[in-house]
Length: 454
Image (cartoon, rainbow, N blue to C red):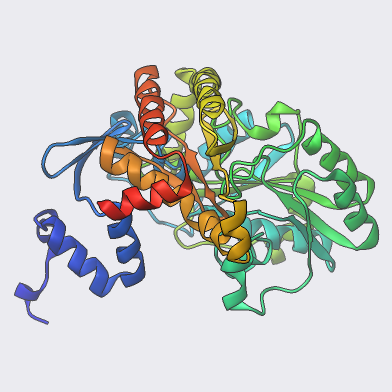
């Protein structure tokens, strides 16, 4: 390959929207490129600042996806980037040596996490944090099964998929890891039956199901799950990859009910939207059972986990969340946005339900139903379940320059997950954009027609 065949960074910066799309379709993911083009998610963005991103023509868009929760401070947070400058000359990866940055970050995490979670393993992503949790639990408990929830999403690696709750993402990769039992999310009685009937290693759950459609469990569910796992001698793993660091109006969603898990999975917001980093926290008792002593200390490791720059970004992110009161901000602005969304629900029958906690909100759309669904043997409802969210997101994008997205395990729901630094005026703009979209498109069929016309 000659030098002139390489694009490099400058070449990437200079690609037009069309060139970018052609290269993505050829070299990255053709199917995804087609989907992005259909719903209008094929813009070329050249700058980001907070909740705003700007395309190559200077148009401003509001980002209410927030990187699926990995952008707690929006795009290009200057103070987190400045933290990287502070460590730009220190060795980023010197794995054989004790890391002061890992030590400091693990300390700070222990100060804000539910009491008793003292040991932290660092990785690079949410699914890696879950994989580490599953191995840690199995190492501590030995043989048995994992109990997980219908609709759950813990990542797409094999271990995480094995405790995931949507068949679409699992079936093509069977056989997955054996020894799993599925129970309905939020059903404490079903959980108790599973614990009673099986030798259970751990129950793994999200406090709020994000990709499941922003499903909030009944009050007291997490506390009951904690009581039941203790009663039957199983561990409790909480996946707070998406709900952690203020997203739900508490530092961690477990804090709403004062629950302390045995293992806690973290990622997304921890890197401040600048560097990917995952973390798996555990009680010392669990850690010692699995990895205690010299002979077991390196049974689970990660080449890139806990690099100096990633830890610096995480340390700065925790400080910013705490010092700027972003947890309280999430609670207050989330309540404001949910109130506005519920007002829209009262006005427009196409909205089936509004759910959420803090700045993690979901809008579920009503299935068409009626005689047409009967005549098509349920096909219309199935199509609506898969595409209603995408169609609304497309309308918001094309007409109002609002970026939103449907949830992976329940695509009939669009998620609003803006940065914790979002302003009230931005929320008002999105609520007005939603109202305009719904007033124009009061049914699934009008949504389809609107998108097709464009």
